[in-house]
Length: 443
Image (cartoon, rainbow, N blue to C red; front, top):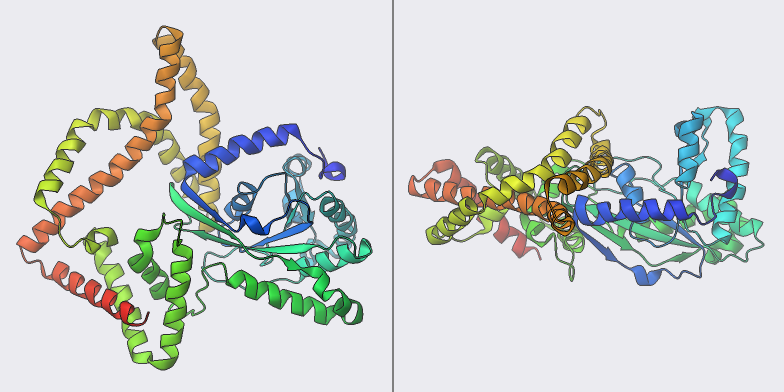
């Protein structure tokens, strides 16, 4: 498959998407929360516009939470080598040329534009990341006009019969770079480009600006947007301190809880700056001291760490230790090697992309090897298959085992702090409680 027929359905691509999507939605992330699918009508012509904070993982978040075979636009310098270009076309990615790619190359955009019209007419769905490049901050940056220009020109070239809808997409990752995090994808209400067609015919530049402004405001409604640069770290950390325990909540996702928290803080900053500054200061103090004492916010939230429960948990940990070792056979290759490789990448926002890519590449090699070994070691054949099927589940068990072990040890550590009247812990607990109470007062 090449550029000329990129919009056509590909069985090979569908199989690859299913495999990679399963790994993305069920293994790499522990949960993928998707909201707003009802805003997408498969009979309409869509351009998806997600925020861009986590490199390639942003595009994959849209791809693996949508049916069909979406087409993506990416910067042209990736396509310089023929082999890479052919792979990009196979994975349904088209290049966009910029002035920095050479003024003469801009002519190539005419052909790309014609192809995007084919894509929209075919109802594939076109994905454009309107911020242009990624940045590892939970903030929407100024959008480029390219997405609006493509929408208007596509309408114009089709005699205004497509009625293109731009779908704002809000993406939120509980952590950009770790395995088994939570990804939230929110599809916002569609923006009908036809509402601006008359304005575009009379004043194209004004129409571009107004549509971009509308898209900006709609995207901000469905994502975490921390406007303050001065207090970014404090506000970003406060999200985890206050709402971290709601990461897996589907009815009222953490993304929207974070939005309410940030809106309350923004309002507080205008009416009581002294209290606002105190909350930001406490947030940073709690963050630093929690790290120093090797604790977590979950542990700080617990009113009591009952010795009986901790001892029972520790006994369970000891008894199930052989299962943990068995599970490590599956998990270690997917945890250790991807992390080591990703750590060598200078752009930290690409770490998640490399970890995902390397982990699934390892899976495609190691899992068949495990299957062969199971048949060699175990007999009859059904027992070999049964043993093989236990590997993924044992791997997830090992992951949760490690988390539970850290929590139990943390509980014992807190009991020790309390028994010895550790000044740092007592001060941390005081600040943490004060912070929770202050945030409650601004709701």
